[in-house]
Amino acid sequence: MKINEFPLLTNENIDPDLVTYLRSKGFDVFDIKESGMQASTDEEIIRLGNQTGRVIITEDRDFCQIIFTQNPEFTGVVYFRPGSFFSAYHIATIDGLLALNPDVQPPFFITAEKQKNKIRLKVRNAMPGPSIH
Image (cartoon, rainbow, N blue to C red; front, side):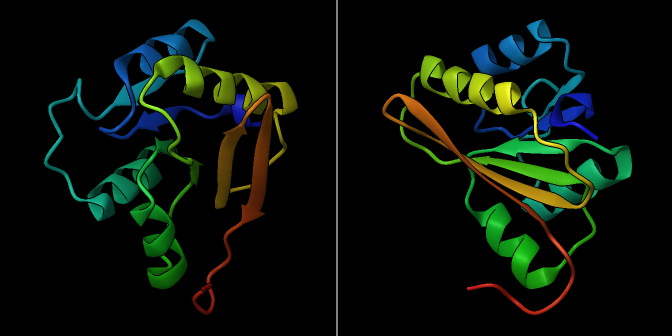
């Protein structure tokens, strides 16, 4: 499947402007803040994403650690490396991701980072197994 075919789950650290932008691009977005679930643990969010087939969008590095050390079942995670508090910065990252629109099979993990005028993506399928350090 292409990344733009998945419904999304945005973590509480994702700016509301990004949620609005993703919806304007046609994504089905479940936002943790809008749902009143801000107190949820990362594990609960991973479980919810898996149960609903949603890809988690986050700036929280803890998701990386949980996925690659605890091996929970999940659909996918897109981790935006923090670099700015401005939504325009991450909108450019989203546009770069959508321009490439990688073909992925769950479970997958994408690291996306805006570096000056280009977007750097690292896409990998996350298979159960030993921890990655």
